[in-house]
Length: 238
Image (cartoon, rainbow, N blue to C red):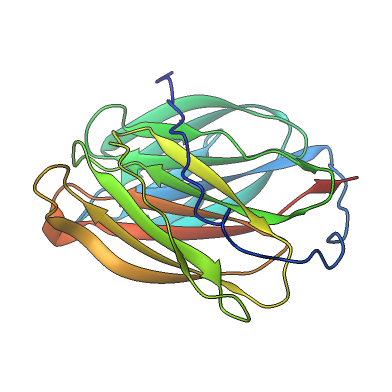
């Protein structure tokens, strides 16, 4: 399995002057988990099979699908679109484990590793967090930088995140959303190091409290690069 390297996240929201308004509703883990699968192969529709059963047909590039699964090891196979179920041109295959209450994300890419697995964010312990946003590099684009402004829509202004970190495929950065009334907004650009040429963006994403959000970079060149958003309910424990 490709080793994922965590990028140290900049303090995009650390400068916000906020007041806690109480913890979100606590959710309990279950005997099931889930997986979200993103098609990161431009110009290709894919069929997705888990344990020999097709769970999604003809998924377009830049789109995602999700599935709740019993906790156990799973076998993923991804095929180029085909009228036959779980047959045809094999694009990727991967074994992965589903743990109780865990949310995994798998991005299907054109080049190695073909099936890039990001582990779930896990539960949030203690008060003070209204959810998280994870930015993840899953594109065949080489080294990039993420430039993000994250703040509350109301009443706080957007604050700038000065982050010079260079990201490579498999890198990720995770930031917490402090508890505050209203909705957050993230303004995200992806640029080339040194040249500062823009690859994607600026793109605007709305982030609701009580949820975990993933902003996933996919693509093979500037003309087809995208950021895919995934939203899931966050799991809180006191």
